[in-house]
Image (cartoon, rainbow, N blue to C red):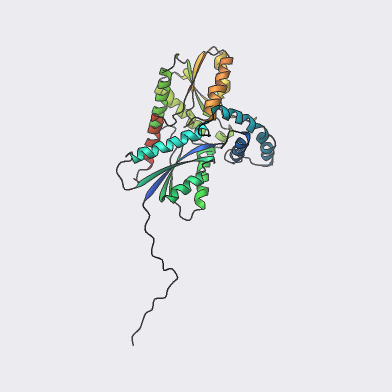
Length: 354
């Protein structure tokens, strides 16, 4: 007796989709910036920033009252005035956004020109901000739409901190958690002691110093501050900053009394990492030092904290105290040296994928 086998339709009669081209996404991440330089724009930015438990760990009722009742009523207007001093009027955005975009565009151009050598894998570069716009989610969505099945996350923070690198990863993980088709993820390591980083920072200092009409008596390396309790809780940021400073000092062959590591941008009444930049600048002027240079090696791109806080506010403290010459050394930004550093990190981190 013959047996006839009949195929039963399952309802899924569509042909198998064609395989997508293999692509890698590189996502440059920076801290963030207000969308506008008015009080409203700054308020929106500060609310997101200061509501992050990685930044302010105790998000209890007391903090919420302080944040909404005091900080978000007073600080936005003051900071908006500072932002207007440095705002990129042509693009209607902050310098941080302008520079980060330029870094991404130059990296893509270098890759397209053969930076990574001949390979069968397309590499797509994008950029995003932990706070504000463009958001990290929007950047990840753009890369996914272009078929990126693997993603290299490059936080543009040389020194690791839970309040910078970790919170950027948190936001990326949050976006990936909502995706059905997740890319494979790599996160670039902090590069606080990377040879290329130390060389490029030191070269920028030497080039700037050679172009000055004076010889600095003291060089100050100012890093963004953190509450002192973060060190006690195990955050490696302080040690990373000290290591960066020491390597730069050795590279420049400066004696210990001619190169000082400090911390800026503190607010509130709690103790922060010391020594403080503003107090150090004032003390140097009071001690009779007339000529100093200040660099900010914890920042990959110039922003409010470097241009206005260092270049204007702290320069003002120095001159008021009797100082005569003050030089702010720019961040690496999208300069040739800055791009050499980013390209070096990307080449290293993509090993095995390319």
